[in-house]
Length: 67
Image 1 (cartoon, rainbow, N blue to C red):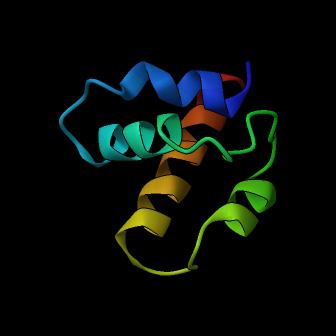
Image 2 (image 1 turned 60 degrees about the horizontal axis):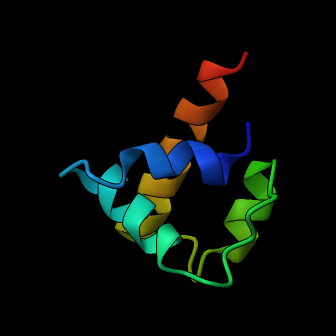
């Protein structure tokens, strides 16, 4: 499963992961085929702050479900 497909499961959740899911869903340029943290990290506008931490935690959660 791709991260994009996985994160969209959270688009109705009222938590930071849900905010991230909605942002990704509404971003027409989001790389839907990314498979690594470095690809996601490179796409993010900054490497600090709440969005970065939420994305990092979400990606680790994603990986934990498939290992």
